[in-house]
Image (cartoon, rainbow, N blue to C red):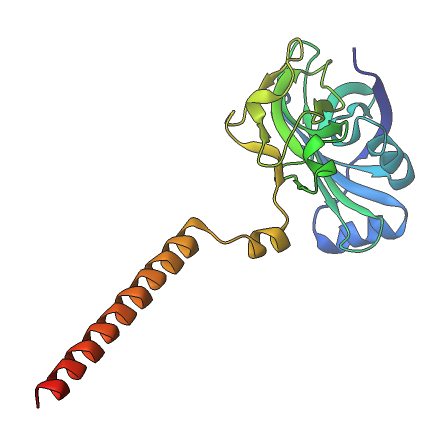
Length: 228
Protein backbone atom coordinates (compact mmCIF):
# COMPACT_ATOMS: atom_id res chain seq x y z
CA UNK A 1 0.00 0.00 0.00
CA UNK A 2 1.24 3.48 -0.84
CA UNK A 3 2.38 5.53 2.13
CA UNK A 4 -0.09 8.17 3.20
CA UNK A 5 1.09 11.68 4.06
CA UNK A 6 -1.00 13.70 6.51
CA UNK A 7 -1.43 17.46 6.09
CA UNK A 8 -3.49 19.84 8.18
CA UNK A 9 -5.76 22.09 6.12
CA UNK A 10 -7.65 25.21 7.18
CA UNK A 11 -11.07 26.10 5.80
CA UNK A 12 -12.99 29.35 5.55
CA UNK A 13 -10.58 31.21 3.29
CA UNK A 14 -11.98 33.85 1.00
CA UNK A 15 -11.66 33.24 -2.71
CA UNK A 16 -10.19 35.64 -5.25
CA UNK A 17 -6.72 36.60 -6.43
CA UNK A 18 -6.22 39.30 -3.77
CA UNK A 19 -6.96 36.88 -0.92
CA UNK A 20 -4.74 34.23 -2.54
CA UNK A 21 -1.82 36.66 -2.70
CA UNK A 22 -2.33 37.53 0.97
CA UNK A 23 -2.27 33.85 1.92
CA UNK A 24 0.93 33.22 -0.02
CA UNK A 25 2.66 36.09 1.76
CA UNK A 26 1.92 34.33 5.07
CA UNK A 27 3.39 31.03 3.88
CA UNK A 28 0.06 29.37 3.05
CA UNK A 29 -1.06 27.83 -0.25
CA UNK A 30 -4.67 28.24 -1.45
CA UNK A 31 -6.20 24.94 -2.54
CA UNK A 32 -9.49 23.21 -3.23
CA UNK A 33 -10.83 19.71 -2.57
CA UNK A 34 -13.50 18.16 -4.78
CA UNK A 35 -14.81 14.72 -5.58
CA UNK A 36 -16.61 12.63 -2.97
CA UNK A 37 -18.37 15.43 -1.11
CA UNK A 38 -21.30 17.39 -2.56
CA UNK A 39 -19.53 20.74 -2.94
CA UNK A 40 -15.87 21.71 -3.42
CA UNK A 41 -14.15 22.90 -0.25
CA UNK A 42 -11.78 25.90 -0.34
CA UNK A 43 -8.79 25.28 1.94
CA UNK A 44 -5.26 26.52 2.57
CA UNK A 45 -2.16 24.55 3.59
CA UNK A 46 1.27 25.34 4.98
CA UNK A 47 3.59 25.81 1.99
CA UNK A 48 6.65 24.13 3.50
CA UNK A 49 4.70 21.02 4.54
CA UNK A 50 2.91 20.81 1.20
CA UNK A 51 6.12 21.13 -0.75
CA UNK A 52 7.72 18.35 1.31
CA UNK A 53 4.70 16.12 0.61
CA UNK A 54 4.94 16.69 -3.14
CA UNK A 55 8.69 16.11 -3.44
CA UNK A 56 8.78 12.50 -2.26
CA UNK A 57 9.42 9.65 -4.72
CA UNK A 58 5.66 9.54 -5.37
CA UNK A 59 5.70 13.16 -6.56
CA UNK A 60 2.32 14.37 -7.82
CA UNK A 61 0.88 10.89 -7.22
CA UNK A 62 1.38 11.12 -3.44
CA UNK A 63 -1.57 9.85 -1.43
CA UNK A 64 -2.36 12.72 0.96
CA UNK A 65 -4.69 12.57 3.95
CA UNK A 66 -6.04 16.05 4.63
CA UNK A 67 -7.26 16.93 8.10
CA UNK A 68 -10.20 19.23 7.36
CA UNK A 69 -12.36 20.54 10.22
CA UNK A 70 -11.64 17.48 12.33
CA UNK A 71 -12.34 15.04 9.49
CA UNK A 72 -9.80 13.02 7.52
CA UNK A 73 -10.09 13.12 3.72
CA UNK A 74 -7.99 10.84 1.54
CA UNK A 75 -6.92 12.78 -1.58
CA UNK A 76 -4.62 12.91 -4.58
CA UNK A 77 -3.17 16.21 -5.88
CA UNK A 78 -4.32 16.52 -9.46
CA UNK A 79 -3.63 20.09 -10.63
CA UNK A 80 -0.52 21.75 -9.19
CA UNK A 81 0.13 25.37 -10.16
CA UNK A 82 3.70 26.55 -9.60
CA UNK A 83 5.47 29.89 -10.01
CA UNK A 84 7.15 30.31 -13.43
CA UNK A 85 10.66 30.65 -12.00
CA UNK A 86 10.51 30.48 -8.19
CA UNK A 87 10.25 27.24 -6.23
CA UNK A 88 6.78 28.18 -5.11
CA UNK A 89 3.52 26.23 -5.18
CA UNK A 90 0.74 28.68 -5.93
CA UNK A 91 -2.40 26.52 -5.93
CA UNK A 92 -3.41 22.85 -5.76
CA UNK A 93 -6.57 21.00 -6.75
CA UNK A 94 -7.09 17.85 -4.65
CA UNK A 95 -9.51 15.09 -5.60
CA UNK A 96 -11.03 13.01 -2.80
CA UNK A 97 -10.63 9.25 -3.24
CA UNK A 98 -11.27 6.02 -1.34
CA UNK A 99 -8.94 3.07 -0.74
CA UNK A 100 -10.89 0.96 -3.24
CA UNK A 101 -10.72 3.41 -6.15
CA UNK A 102 -8.80 2.96 -9.38
CA UNK A 103 -7.44 6.25 -10.69
CA UNK A 104 -5.66 7.67 -13.70
CA UNK A 105 -2.09 8.82 -13.20
CA UNK A 106 1.07 9.68 -15.11
CA UNK A 107 4.33 8.01 -14.10
CA UNK A 108 7.90 8.55 -15.38
CA UNK A 109 9.69 6.02 -17.58
CA UNK A 110 13.21 5.19 -16.35
CA UNK A 111 15.55 3.85 -19.03
CA UNK A 112 17.83 1.01 -17.94
CA UNK A 113 21.08 -0.09 -19.61
CA UNK A 114 23.16 1.33 -22.45
CA UNK A 115 21.81 0.75 -25.94
CA UNK A 116 24.10 -1.13 -28.33
CA UNK A 117 23.15 1.44 -30.99
CA UNK A 118 24.58 4.27 -28.91
CA UNK A 119 27.94 2.51 -28.66
CA UNK A 120 27.81 2.21 -32.46
CA UNK A 121 27.36 5.97 -32.82
CA UNK A 122 23.59 6.27 -32.76
CA UNK A 123 21.62 9.01 -30.99
CA UNK A 124 19.12 8.34 -28.19
CA UNK A 125 15.70 9.92 -28.79
CA UNK A 126 13.03 9.95 -26.06
CA UNK A 127 9.71 11.29 -27.44
CA UNK A 128 8.04 10.27 -24.17
CA UNK A 129 9.54 10.43 -20.68
CA UNK A 130 6.31 9.43 -18.90
CA UNK A 131 3.27 7.28 -19.57
CA UNK A 132 -0.39 7.44 -18.55
CA UNK A 133 -1.78 4.54 -16.53
CA UNK A 134 -4.77 3.39 -14.52
CA UNK A 135 -4.04 1.74 -11.18
CA UNK A 136 -5.42 1.15 -7.67
CA UNK A 137 -5.14 4.36 -5.67
CA UNK A 138 -3.06 2.48 -3.07
CA UNK A 139 -0.65 1.01 -5.63
CA UNK A 140 0.37 3.73 -8.10
CA UNK A 141 3.90 2.87 -9.28
CA UNK A 142 6.56 5.50 -8.66
CA UNK A 143 8.01 4.77 -12.12
CA UNK A 144 8.31 2.03 -14.74
CA UNK A 145 11.69 0.70 -15.95
CA UNK A 146 12.40 0.00 -19.62
CA UNK A 147 15.51 -1.96 -20.66
CA UNK A 148 17.09 -0.42 -23.78
CA UNK A 149 20.36 -2.39 -23.82
CA UNK A 150 19.41 -4.43 -26.92
CA UNK A 151 18.43 -1.47 -29.11
CA UNK A 152 20.42 -1.06 -32.32
CA UNK A 153 20.46 1.95 -34.66
CA UNK A 154 17.02 2.21 -36.22
CA UNK A 155 15.29 0.31 -33.38
CA UNK A 156 12.50 1.70 -31.18
CA UNK A 157 10.46 0.68 -28.14
CA UNK A 158 6.82 1.65 -27.78
CA UNK A 159 4.21 1.84 -25.04
CA UNK A 160 3.25 -1.74 -25.89
CA UNK A 161 6.81 -2.83 -25.03
CA UNK A 162 6.64 -1.52 -21.45
CA UNK A 163 6.80 -4.29 -18.83
CA UNK A 164 3.57 -5.50 -17.26
CA UNK A 165 2.88 -4.33 -13.70
CA UNK A 166 0.32 -6.20 -11.63
CA UNK A 167 -2.91 -4.24 -11.34
CA UNK A 168 -1.69 -1.49 -13.68
CA UNK A 169 -3.09 -0.76 -17.14
CA UNK A 170 -1.33 1.43 -19.70
CA UNK A 171 -4.01 3.69 -21.16
CA UNK A 172 -2.09 5.21 -24.07
CA UNK A 173 -1.86 3.94 -27.66
CA UNK A 174 0.51 0.93 -27.55
CA UNK A 175 2.11 2.17 -30.78
CA UNK A 176 3.33 5.46 -29.26
CA UNK A 177 7.15 5.54 -29.40
CA UNK A 178 8.85 5.84 -26.02
CA UNK A 179 12.50 5.62 -27.08
CA UNK A 180 14.42 5.11 -30.32
CA UNK A 181 18.01 5.05 -31.59
CA UNK A 182 18.50 7.20 -34.66
CA UNK A 183 21.33 7.83 -37.13
CA UNK A 184 23.28 11.03 -36.33
CA UNK A 185 22.26 13.94 -38.56
CA UNK A 186 25.86 14.36 -39.78
CA UNK A 187 25.98 10.79 -41.07
CA UNK A 188 22.59 11.14 -42.73
CA UNK A 189 23.89 14.20 -44.60
CA UNK A 190 26.97 12.29 -45.79
CA UNK A 191 25.09 9.24 -47.02
CA UNK A 192 23.27 9.82 -50.32
CA UNK A 193 19.63 8.83 -50.35
CA UNK A 194 18.18 6.36 -52.89
CA UNK A 195 16.62 9.32 -54.68
CA UNK A 196 20.00 11.06 -54.96
CA UNK A 197 21.60 7.87 -56.28
CA UNK A 198 18.85 7.46 -58.88
CA UNK A 199 19.23 11.09 -59.99
CA UNK A 200 23.00 10.74 -60.28
CA UNK A 201 22.59 7.59 -62.34
CA UNK A 202 20.06 9.32 -64.61
CA UNK A 203 22.35 12.31 -65.07
CA UNK A 204 25.18 9.93 -65.96
CA UNK A 205 23.03 8.27 -68.59
CA UNK A 206 22.05 11.67 -70.04
CA UNK A 207 25.71 12.74 -70.22
CA UNK A 208 26.65 9.48 -71.93
CA UNK A 209 23.81 9.86 -74.43
CA UNK A 210 24.87 13.46 -75.08
CA UNK A 211 28.46 12.43 -75.75
CA UNK A 212 27.34 9.67 -78.13
CA UNK A 213 25.13 12.16 -79.98
CA UNK A 214 27.99 14.62 -80.25
CA UNK A 215 30.25 11.90 -81.65
CA UNK A 216 27.63 10.98 -84.28
CA UNK A 217 27.17 14.62 -85.29
CA UNK A 218 30.91 15.06 -85.63
CA UNK A 219 31.18 11.92 -87.74
CA UNK A 220 28.32 12.96 -90.04
CA UNK A 221 29.83 16.42 -90.43
CA UNK A 222 33.17 14.86 -91.37
CA UNK A 223 31.50 12.63 -93.98
CA UNK A 224 29.72 15.60 -95.49
CA UNK A 225 32.95 17.60 -95.81
CA UNK A 226 34.63 14.66 -97.52
CA UNK A 227 31.81 14.43 -100.06
CA UNK A 228 32.28 18.04 -101.08
